[in-house]
Image (cartoon, rainbow, N blue to C red):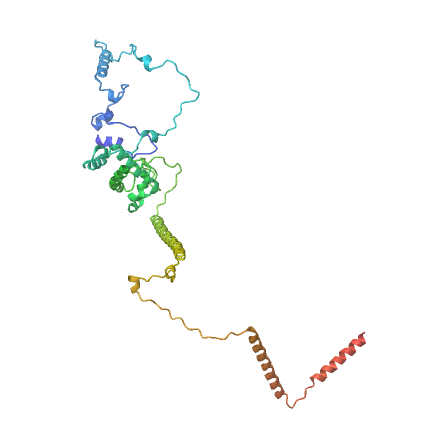
Amino acid sequence: MKQTGSARFRQRKISVKQGLQVLRQIDIPDLEEEQQREIQQVETGVEKGEEEEHHLQAAINASLAAAAGAKVQQIYIPTPDASKIFEGYSKYYTKKFTEPTTYIRFSSTVEDTSGCPYFLDENDFEFLEKINSTKRSASQKCTEDVFEQIMHQFETAIADRQPFLSTDLSQILSFEELESAFSEFNLPLYINFAKMIYPHWKERRIQRRGRPIMYTLKFEEGDKDDSDPYTCFRRREFRQVRKTRRSDAQSSERLRRLKAEMDAARSLTELVVKRETLRKDSLQLDWDTFKQRNMVKELKRKLGIKGDDEDLVSKKKKQSGVDSQIPAVRLAIPKVPEIDLVTLEDIYHKREKAIDTAIEEKLLRRREADIGWEDYTEIVTGWLGIFEDYSSYRGN
């Protein structure tokens, strides 16, 4: 029988596409599992919590007995008498009603009307009792409302500034960085309470692995399994999930590298700002010193004081401490030999003289080579010129 029952009523996985009936503990009869499946439930028409009311049970039993043929007195469920007239009705309720020109509107949000969304739990109560256990006056003790408001401010500030705190818990902001979230209150006692509560809030946030202390709705986180029945507000599109740990590791490494580079750039920028601030202060100090020296100079002239103006000239201070013990390093600069300046005219003259000398040497060698020979070049050239003149004359 048990095998048949287990095969017939087998456990099914919870599906997000199928509605489930919500039952309370009082809705489930205190019977064995097999008996509960066999018994047919009869609806009484009232809520389950009211079925045990003795007047209702008496009326049901009387009606069942009458249906079975027994002679019983008709029993009615007692109800309050509504036939009386309330004496102060006209005082609290007016008979005249004026219809408004527009519909009644309510512009405030649920968060504005519900108050602080943070609620204390057992751990918070224990910590609050430890704070208030010290000898303090009633006005200096932290109330539950103030504690909830401070915890809510911490939660809101960390959600705005570090929304991805769960990825790296070591980067959680300190109290000095979150103190600006309490600037709107401007109460010293409030800030003191926040300083005392910050370690408790930080510890609880780390225990929650960076997630909010107050439980919230669970949304889709990346490419996780879609069969989780507790996930709210799912995407409608369905896409195949591709799980590659290598790509996730590469993306995480790139994000870490980018964060390191951004931190280095921020540090460098802070150092530059510090350097420029010091330079500005130094220039301002020099300017003030210059004005004071001018005033001293004018006073000397008015009083007729004569003397050296060494106190009006800036002198370099000798280095003291560790810097004075460091030997000065001298750079050996090579000496440049002294060279007479040469003009362009001299350079051109030397170049022309060298060219003339080379031509004369070539002509001299040509003459030496032509000894014993006669040059008829000029005679032949002259006859060729006469012949060209005669040819042009005949052509005309």
